[in-house]
Image (cartoon, rainbow, N blue to C red; front, side, top):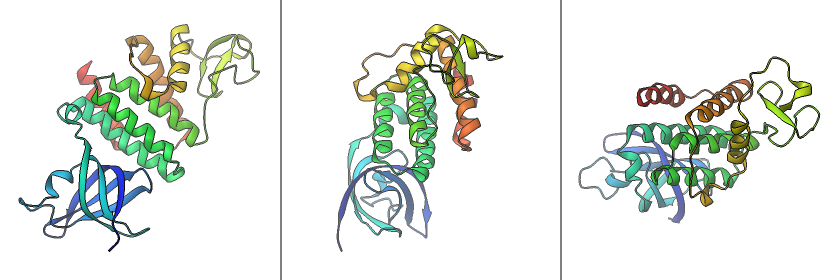
Length: 245
């Protein structure tokens, strides 16, 4: 039996037969894979503590391409305790896992995994989970082939920007504004900054609530208009988020 080491994050777990679990995980090298953790439901199993959702580890598996692989053991990279003890953070993390698995179906680029891990670690370190989620959502648009234009007017290329439009694919100038809602200049600056941000290099992240609201509304409508993706975790997140406002 050949053992393969792979870094990854468990995105779901469910019972498998009497004492085992079937795990789905997002991995650095193979995208989304399914793994059986034999005997992991037993109280004395060495696999019991490393087979729960949001386990971020280096897994040793008997990897079988296109088939069900088998988990041997794992070394935890980060336990993500801070996320796991906070319902709002768990909700954001669950949505990130769900969205990432959907994006990987369209594009199995390794950078997608790296963006996910960087985002989860920032949430773990108490950065605003909503803003971190927005960064990830914006970055994934390029891997889905539907990037907005956050540099110049999406219609004519002029640099004097008035607002932003889902229908017109990004920034628009005064000449091409029709009935689009006008957002603040700060929102235009921040959404562009988030789009180009290197998540790993972020050391400070402060965005006002009005700006967050305008950015959220644009991203939400953009995904709905162009991706066709629907995730129950996003609907749950919306309900949870409003309880924290």
